[in-house]
Image 1 (cartoon, rainbow, N blue to C red):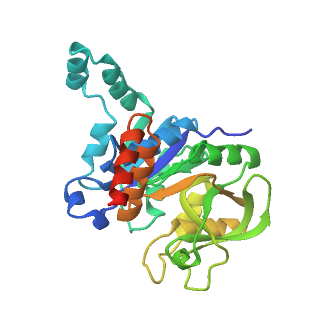
Image 2: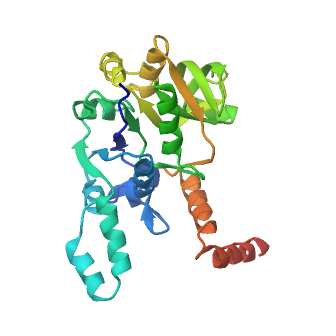
Image 3: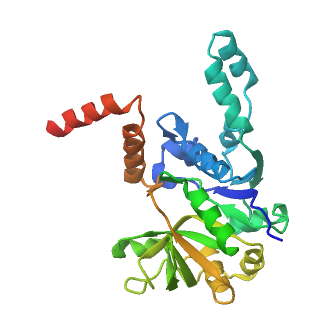
Amino acid sequence: MTKKLTTAIIPAAGLGTRFLPQTKAMPKEMLPLIDKPIIQYVVEEVVAAGITDIIIVTGAHKRSLEDHFDHQYELEAKLDRDGKSELADQLRGIADMANFIYIRQKGSYGTGTPILNAAHLLRDEPFLVMWADEIFTSPKPRAVQLVEAYEKLQAPVISLIPMAPERLRYYGVASVTQELEDGLVKLDGLVEKPAAGQAPSELASVGGYVLTPDIVEILRRTKPHPVHNEIFLADAIGELARTKEVYGQVLDGVWHDTGNKQKYLECIVELALTDTELAPGFREYLQRKLAD
């Protein structure tokens, strides 16, 4: 019997050092993209894919994440009294999007650690993993693309995008054995942060996975990377792909790594230029600045 995907893990324990001093007191996941924090875009994406239970793996000084996805009854009531019920309903909707579960990250650093921390909550079912500082703009949300591929294949699916060769050393890179239809590829491995010239393809794994429960046991026996001293999810996925079917979905859309300063700014510009209210005036402003 096919098990329905209902759970997502969103790792959000990083220190956000690339955005210091701003992230000294504010989690990087709460940095604004116009009028919403980055992590809200990620949550909205997984909810669009049918997820009902969201496990956010946090760290110290991340309490504002919990506050954001909770009700603020005094503010909601004031907005109602002031005739701003539409805005009050919008805030209520943020808290009611899903069942939120928060746990603190413990153990060695690395992309595999949050999954180990949340393993006891997974109910031996498939689950979605989305990083809290990466968003994707596309007609069909990235999470929906991944879940649809999983439902079709009944096997783990990771998100992939073409990446410039000089950037591959920063990502997990797919080893492809077969190209299927609709952007799907079959994998026999995933290499984390390959050395220059050693990448098995130009398809990088970025911020989205549908995984099955067997990945947890692999992670439990995965040793920290000898160079980076971290438990990498890519290493566990690579091991899984050597014994079971694992697929990649080449995504249709634009990926934004908002943990990178330039990419963060580019993301804000793209969102502003697709906002029906902001776009006309903002586009005019950009044209003036470029003409100076």
